[in-house]
Image 1 (cartoon, helix red, strand yellow):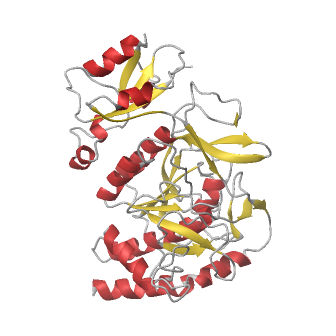
Image 2: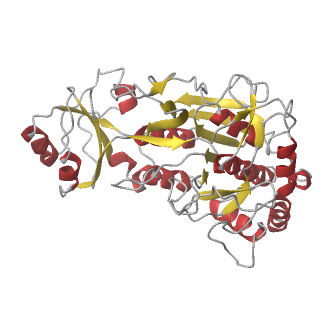
Image 3: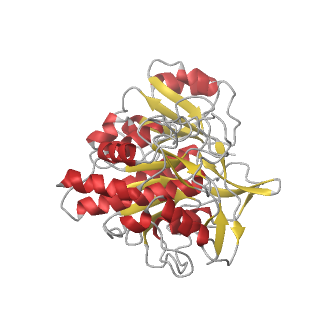
Length: 431
């Protein structure tokens, strides 16, 4: 089983020898580099570990200022050449080297998914959710614009679902667990391609909330906007439950790909705990924010102060969920600095294999906010303006309905999303 280490250096390596992007290297080893820095090489030689050096991120040529600023150009993946077990202390030893900022083994991280309930019932709960955030009034300002794209970074999307047919533009599948123990996984978990088929239904459910056509469900929040399908989670069986699971360092290239391929908003209805080393997704999320891509993430579903990432990262719009009465749902995790809450109880939306389902969770609340951000960006773009992330967060902060007398609540952020007031404030600001 070939293992991988991700290493971020304090300086980029000289390009006298080409260093391939690791995704390409998996299938094409025509370009090979077998050394890193003298310190790392010496340490690996002491352990008799031979490796190939690759890039963790695909870079623009030449690297952009944003890539350089976040250190994406000096982040590398070391792929061991033989089926070795990585010594337990190796990453820690590498981290101690003066030339190294960060080093970690790749690891499979679980992202428990809210359990859906398959149904053919009417979508009354969605209508109730739409009323709670004043979506019908917001429709007076627009239904979105096809030039605005929401990237759904998730379990994939059923791109041929009737509710989403013609809505999904660019697409990619970054799931590849080759070399890991995959006995608990089901379905497709190897290979990179442009077929992000959703075997779980989670990403399809989220996509319907963002931009569903409204055939056998109510329209999504931003029905005229486009969806970008980025599959980063495979399906793993945990007892009787299916969970989304993936390698953090496979999710990261998916995020960067979405940014580089024109996403205006990224929805991440997933979250993982911090178990050591650098904060998950930190560099690539900062890269997204530097490119003025708004990142919306679920806060988590365990009802505790546990922090889930990327929602807990600075600059991310972390979203909690409300129940059908508009109260903060008991399952909402509040360790992240929640920005706003949105409906997340019994939401009816598109599902895998052309189906429909009810589901509850902050996973469902996040796309209500991602769709809202897409609507606001659409309205500004149609008027020749561009909204910054700072402007978006200011609008959400000033227009959300407080759940109590506090200006900001730990469990509800600045309150329940109010799209009508958000549009009124945006209209005033644009003049």
